[in-house]
Structure formats: C-alpha cells, structure tokens
Amino acid sequence: MATRARKLGATVSFAALAVASAAICLLSLTACTTDGDGGGPPQAGVVLNEIVCAAIADGKFNPIGSDWAEFYNGSLETVDLAGARLIDSKTKTFDEAIALPKGTTIPALGYIVVFFNDQGFGNPVIEKRLGSSEVLTLYGSDQTLLDQLDWSEGDCLEGGSWGRSPDGGSALRTFAAPTPNAKNP
Ligand SMILES: [Ca+2]
Image (cartoon, rainbow, N blue to C red; front, side, top):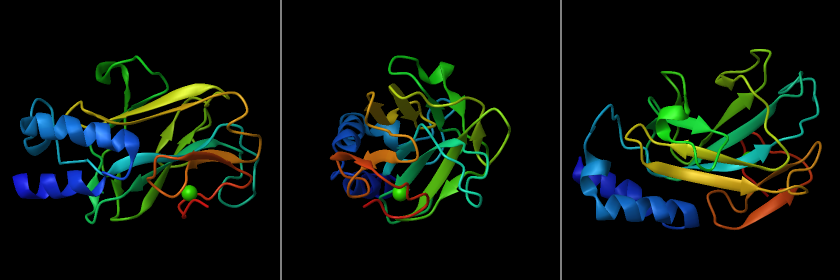
C-alpha cells in the first residue's frame, strides 16, 4: 500500500497545488498510506481541473445551465472518491465540506464532472451555484487538502470556463468554450 501511495503522489508532481498535497504526503506518510480516522483509499493525483461558474444551457450535456466543476485524475489508477469532500470556501474545514456520493470514482487519466445547482440535475450534484469570484476546495477522505482553486471576477466568463492548461498543470486560463469530461485546451 505504501508503494502504491508513493507512486500516486509522484504522478501529481506536475501540478503546483498537487505538489503541496504530495509534500504533505511525503512529510506524513501515515496520512497518505493508511485509512486514518474516517479515511479511505488514497486519492492523491485528483485535482480540480475546470470550473464553469456562469453556465449557459446547451440542450444536451447541460440542459438547465448548471454550473459545474471538472475533476482530473492524473494518476495511472482509478481513484475512488468515497469520503472526499468539496466546499466553496478557502477557509472552511473538512468537517464543514460536502461529501461526494458513495460510488463516485474517477478513471486513470480521466475526468468526472460535479454539477452545482438547486434543481437536482446531474450526478454528482451539489445544491448550490458557483460565484464569479470564489474558491473551491477539495479534501480527501483522510482530510488532507487535495486541491484548491481560487478564481476572480473575469476569469470564468458566461458560457465559458476557467481551469488548468494542460490538464492537471499549474497554469490557469480562461476558456471560451467548456470541455466537460474532456481534455482542456
Ligand atoms: Ca475539461
């Protein structure tokens, strides 16, 4: 298990924020390699990859115009996000964050989209909208910080998106068109 966790940690070294997460893992292997208190499977390698905070309905993927956040798994193994939590805040803790549903998994080098709306559309869905200037924080099931994105007014435009370029990288860009469950430009 320890070997697997180290391998997962190594695969995220290209993402600045994930580097911080990996550093935490390296400093405290216990937090990365055991279930810990209320822990779960290793989840290093998963980052917040793309944000839509002023969605436009597209009739197919997003008929209600829900905001969403795309996660990217930069590791070479499927990651079970059971117990992982998400919160639209820079300072709120794991205990205050919203748990992702059981059964939420993300394939190796793959994506999932978490929807944000109050109509129950999508799976997983969190019953709130994303703001035009906000912070989204992702905690692993072992309460470690997996990733955090901080965007400002003008980053995330109506009908467009904002996120990492390339996938999992440290550079952040505004995109004219979203790419849900697909590679960022
Ligand atoms: Ca994308």
